[in-house]
Image 1 (cartoon, rainbow, N blue to C red):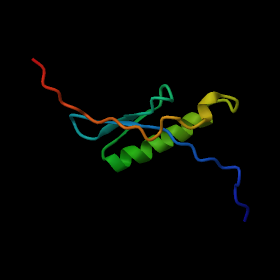
Image 2 (image 1 turned 180 degrees about the vertical axis):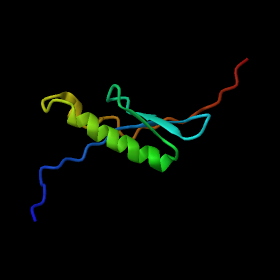
Image 3 (image 1 turned 135 degrees about the vertical axis):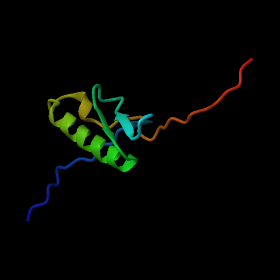
Image 4 (image 1 turned 90 degrees about the horizontal axis):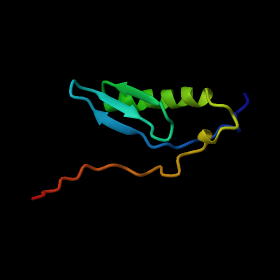
Length: 84
């Protein structure tokens, strides 16, 4: 059995948004048009992973998009501010 030693692991930030009717929508800011959703957070993670794989299959091999997101690890935290 041969192992695929040419496999790369790429990292991207994904933004998960809870939907009012339930579930989550998710997007990858550095991959324009890469969106998915899921009824649970786990399902949304699985679905966006698949969406990213499909997105990258459709991108020419010479494209800059195939590199990992340099900002991976950043996250968004809601912050409330009282103003007068």
